[in-house]
Length: 462
Image 1 (cartoon, rainbow, N blue to C red):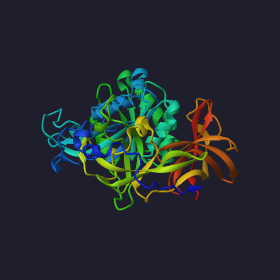
Image 2 (cartoon, rainbow, N blue to C red):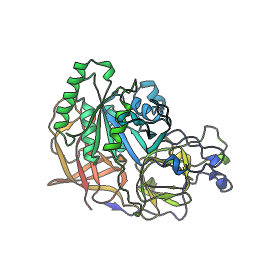
Image 3 (cartoon, rainbow, N blue to C red):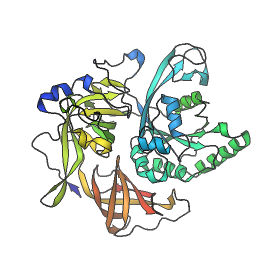
Image 4 (cartoon, helix red, strand yellow):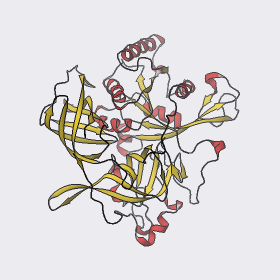
């Protein structure tokens, strides 16, 4: 059931002392870390790019998904120039653990023809001519490891299209190839391009065999007509063809800026260095994407469900209120952000409550204009016939009372304990509350062989 949140009498969790608030809003204090496309700010105020340089904010979010070690992060680097595995554990293990973000500018040479004209360079690498701006995009690099499916699903909620990477030197489909494609279908991502990577590691015969495996796999899914582009991310082979295909197949969606603002938080972090002078610290940063409406610097905002509070031995959620002190997108400061690519919102929030993705799953909007907070859900269910992503072919058994399920709602991942069953629906109590509209789609996973596996989806009933 939806819970009416309590509203604090004044702004909560300010990041700085009153005498330092003026300083915190200056651009020279907005030293955003190189996460979700936020580059370090200059000490002098930046002005948005001129129209000749193209749009400052990326127009579209494109996910990179697929089985572990199939080249998602390498391809992201080839397209954007940024290596998204920067977390210490990611560097040590060589796999993506958190969502990675990077922006890229697609350009087109005015002299070269066809595929050869597409590049991410300001000057055409083939003829040296100046390349014209086409579009700026954000890439969301999702983890491919089976234990990180909740993170992948959270990222999928903000994707407008996706690149499904398939390694040519392995059989297709691998478990998470199948699971990720099903996840894209469940959350409503319609535009998918299959990228047959690592063609440099196989001969022509193996490449064709793998291509036919991909075609057969896709024929059993809603993506049977998806383009298949052979590349080598490692050697930058066919990157121009991939850019051309993205431009033709994944258009910028129509956005509604007149609706009430709603931003999904996919990352949150503290950008202050250890040992910083408390009077010079800046507030926490919220990273994610606006799905409707728009947000501006100086506006008061609300985060729901907010923070879990305990009073008189009772637990409840209290929305968090703060002010936007800066917005960064495409590596630049802007006064306003609209639906489209990833952005970073600088706030007055205490850095300690946003660090290490603590606020991931929250929804941001203007005060009093966000959906309800739910700590219990009734879901109308649509279960799959087979468990997706498991190494063995398993049927999906009916949901049982007392069963623990993983639920992905917007960018939030929570656990629900089933409390009651009905025909094609069930009720559950949530471990972590969520903010969502009635009718919102929820991905449902159950524990199979010590891993949560996708078994279907539900819609929230009021």
